[in-house]
Image (tube, rainbow, N blue to C red; front, side, top):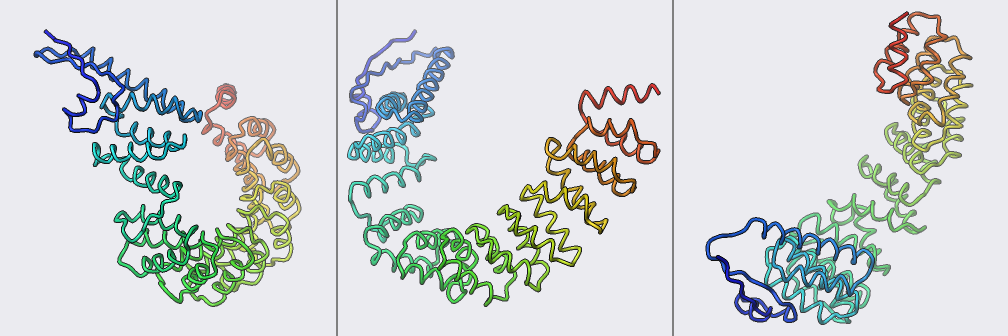
Length: 417
């Protein structure tokens, strides 16, 4: 038999050793006389899940008040979502401008759920709220490294002269490389000449050599003429291929087509030339790649340019190369990359090329390209007109590997012949 007993939340909090955060909530607790009902537990779990989903929906809709009220109810149930609900309650309170209430909720959260997976998020939120309230968080006295960096980020905006020495100290400390990289990234966000000077020295390899690669990467993110000039200096002065490749990626991030095109034309290291070409493809630098292709005499490099044209989605130029290129190896490469671009855009052109060229190698390349597109309709059309037994066999084999009704119907008819 079960005897229901009702407690106010304040009394329940005293019994559990928790602060009376939920004083306005009434909770029903059933005294157990030995016979638990699994259906009651299931209903409670379902109810908590419903409330939590409702609260997160309100959060997504920026209905902070409804979210806060509902998360408060879920937290009071002290079930599986209780710790997350306290965190999101504090978040909603902060969004409503209730900073002192949010900080009180976070204090309660830290006390009741010290090992929650939301622990670090809670610390970060506390720093955000305190900084938004105008409080200066002293990074030197923050133990958690991630939270310390958040505090430093805020300090950079209000008191950069004080923050910069602390960030420099982190760079020479015994902290993990991850934390050092984060500190370096915070420096890139400063905008102060001193912060830029620190990042520049690291990028050049003058200090903290283990951080040179991320520093070069951050220069690309920073962008601007000053950063691009520094990247050029790093590229010229470094003999490390890994560092040079990072510079090329940073040029791509910064959208610097000029430097990439210059290196794609003049770099003596074939591997680096290829990387510069690839980055131009990622940037979608169609005109630059077309210019480069027309002036490049080396076939392997021209193939690399064709691949970059595929990356940049330049179907028109690839079609032109596939039709007019004198070097058959390059025509085949262009046809293959057209196949990788998809059937709706390039399928009809590939079929036209098949009809217009009697070369077995070109026709095999078209068959392969149509297969890459999974273009069963076009392959079936070619299979019906092809007289060369070897080519027809190749087409049928490709169709047999496709999973479509068109392919199945064709194969059934083909077997009847």
